Image (cartoon, rainbow, N blue to C red; front, side, top):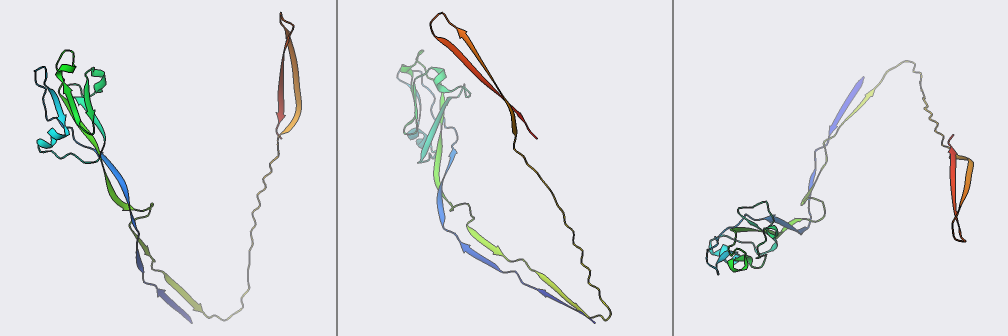
Length: 199
C-alpha cells in the first residue's frame, strides 16, 4: 500500500513602520527674464527677485546657487562678456548701463538652484518593510513492500592538489663604478641586480 499526504502553508504578511528622516532635494528653476535694458545712462537690466515676484512668478525661499547669462549669448559665461553685473541669490541680477563700456547692458536672464527638505526613510530601508512567507507544499509518502533489499552506497571523492612555492634567489650581481672628478671627492655609484628563478 502507498499513502501520500500533502500539506500547504498559507502566506503571512507583517508590516513594520520605519521612522522617516529628512533629505535636501535641489533643482534648478526656470530662466527668468522680466526686464529689458533701457537706453538711458542710469537705466539697465534688473531681473531682481523683487521684480520677478512683481511679474507674478514664485521664487523659492531656499536658494543655494544662481546662474546668470546673456540672452544673446546663452553658452558664454557672463564674466567673459566683460560687463559689470550683480548676480547673487539675495538680490538677483542687476546691470547698470553706466557701469559698462559702451554704456549699455546686455539683456540678461537668471535662474536659481532651489532646495527643500523632503521626508525619506532613514537609512537605505524602505518606509514600510514587508515580510512574506512563501507557501510551501510538503509531500510525504510511505510505501510498504515485501522482499529482499540490499543497501547500496557509492562514495565518490574528488581530490585537487595545488602547490605554491616561493621564488628562489639564485644569484646576486653587484657592480661598483667610480668616476673621478676634478675635485678631491669621488662619486661612487653602486647598482644591484637581483635575478630570480621561479620554480
